[in-house]
Length: 146
Image (tube, rainbow, N blue to C red; front, side, top):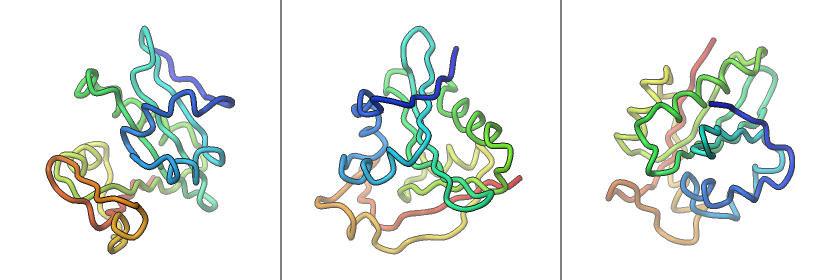
């Protein structure tokens, strides 16, 4: 298993990116300013994009695992890598939909709820978004601190 920094041609992984954020317009807002990592284990299984938001504050903007490789530890491996890779990271944020499975995953990775952005998914996407059969409305931010 190898985690690699992607410096060029990040859009090569657009299909994987769109699993976590289904709007290419939204992905474009953070992709170039973020660090992209792919997890390769006999082929790319997962990816993440991390942005620096302030001194000591990073945000996990996108984390996606190919569906056939869910629940195999790839997502958690990338979260742990991102959190440990940035030595000056005092706080890692992640924003996600209010879905029990996703929130449960991040809580197992050591995140706790920080705050919510009301109507984020309604105000920022041109279509309704559903995950696990539930319409996403508010963005739930979680944080992990060192």
